[in-house]
Length: 449
Ligand SMILES: NC(=O)c1ccc[n+]([C@@H]2O[C@H](COP(=O)([O-])OP(=O)(O)OC[C@H]3O[C@@H](n4cnc5c(N)ncnc54)[C@H](O)[C@@H]3O)[C@@H](O)[C@H]2O)c1
Image (cartoon, rainbow, N blue to C red; front, side):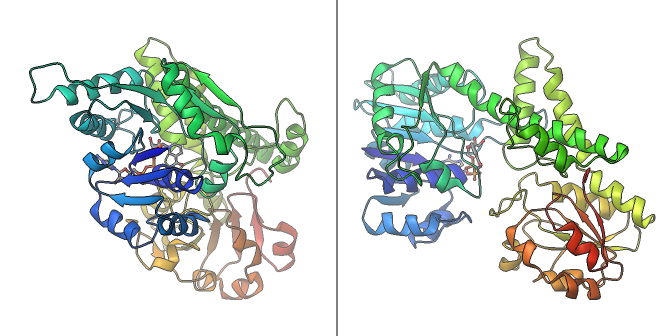
């Protein structure tokens, strides 16, 4: 099928690349010229395992092209994905101005050929009808007569995880399609057939991927409810960890013990220094805001946010307990990104930690496997980015593990111990081998562990 994906960030680019890999003819549109030039030269603007290779092979086969020309994209696609960002406003609402600009642009360029317009961006509940209205407005611009256009809007929320986005696209737990047009839903189901049939799945013997066909608002709500549930689950285990710290229990054992209960499940039960990233914080806030708009006080979700706010200071509290005065001390951060295997720093807990350490007069250094490679500051201030973990350890009064990158398990901690002024490690993800570190002479402190 002919597909146009508008917005080539973590979601749009992965979607475009994966759809071209399963045989569709995809054009990816972005209004960032530099990004488009980079992609046209065969390079991915984001770090995502496996993405560059697939992108290059699809481009070489002619199934995948990149452009800044929205009109060309709209003309090409039978299915038009809107995959631009919906960042949070200071009020907690989603900023939908990028979706609006794209919907208007689509409207400006529609012809009588039938199109399915897909909201892949995470958009507030009710956005399906709103996008329809904006597209119609766009189509009417500059004309007095009723435009001769034909389209339907579908909501197709995305559940991929940064760091395993390509894998998740080919191995989804479900595909959600919301809309009120049978024709549009049938086209979307056909688009995803190779994925539904697990043709690119790691385990091809699995039953077909469930398709959840529903109405627009329910599809939009599924996305917010899923992220809010996962964020709440992490806040729950973080709260348990904080109680464990006080009573002398070990949250890692507790999580294992409760996670084996099939009603609970073991995923998203890792205690740590809080959730972050480009999705959880903004999606939970947006749902709280929507509930407020409709006269409902979402108390549980507000508590999940509040627990998380406190959790982001937990490493700082532990540093203060151990080191007392932080002014003039040097703290090294192992990892910066909000999770491993990504270069995304949006709303990463490291940012809060850096700000708070700076405020208290500490000197902050950091090493991150991906960000350190590029030699840029990534918009961060108040932190010196080191080229490797040993340079990070040099002169540190403490190190905090912020991100659980696999490569941190293989660091030469013996050498790092010699280089540190004071061998203290706060393990913000309960990730490192405590007994090994203690045998090397480190003081090890986990989170409820
Ligand atoms: N990142 C994730 O893990 C993830 C997962 C699920 C859902 N989502 C949702 O998907 C959406 C996209 O997220 P993302 O992380 O990919 O965002 P992103 O910021 O990485 O990418 C957005 C892209 O859209 C482009 N863009 C903005 N305005 C444009 C316009 N008018 N025309 C063409 N391109 C334009 C930007 O240049 C950028 O390349 C958001 O709504 C997000 O909530 C994200």
